Picture 1: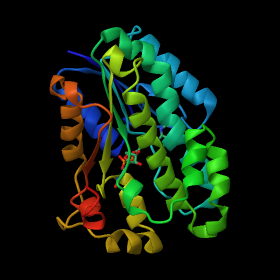
Picture 2: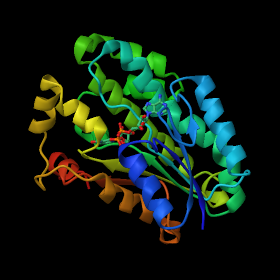
Picture 3: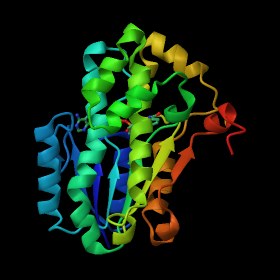
Picture 4: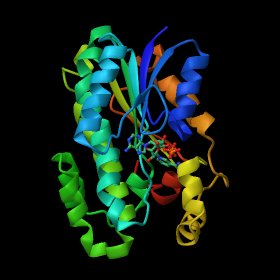
Length: 261
Ligand code: NAI
């Protein structure tokens, strides 16, 4: 049975993944700003350092896998944009860089980072926003969306998820990741009924946008279903899955981009 670090383990999909892993007999080291094994604020450098070190200590330097689910939605509050940007991007890539030696130590580790179908369905995301993230500068990414004023949040959110997906694809194939037996992949959920989506549905302006969003299967997804896909991506069967972005979104991405493959 394996040892897995799971961020965002206190709520929604991260929690569903942690519960699935535990039910299957694995050991989970949860990381979250809310009550869990390791309480850390991933929006700050000190919090990310604490999360890295505490997990390495709790796992005794060996991780069979990691799931990076901590994240914030596109909350339409300009003061929160730097926090969204830092958690959604640095809360994934800094932790993965810090945990890489522990993942390499087991020789066959599996990593699933949470992207989003926002990465392909939000129009007009600027390349310079994504580039700023990939340069490790979420504060600059936030400055690039100032032109969108009160509507800036979805652009920061989508750019953070594009950047996470690109970071994973760029690193997944490198010798220090693929060559060390580590499989890096992304899951890109669509609208999943979690506290994050519930908060959006409770805000009239955001609810309108969420409800107008086409979901061909006609429903919101369930956290448990996403957890099952993540579990598969953590399993030995995922040995040949490397740098993939798996959309599990009720058909929204296919609806918007039927000809992209
Ligand atoms: P959620 O709100 O239920 O869970 C997110 C978790 O992240 C919470 O436990 C929260 O405490 C934690 N978190 C937030 N800020 C943090 C911080 N500063 N430091 C440490 N932990 C922090 O959300 P949900 O829906 O389960 O989201 C999981 C991931 O899936 C996120 O990355 C989100 O962006 C992504 N996603 C969600 C979709 C949805 O429709 N719910 C759709 C596509 C992607």
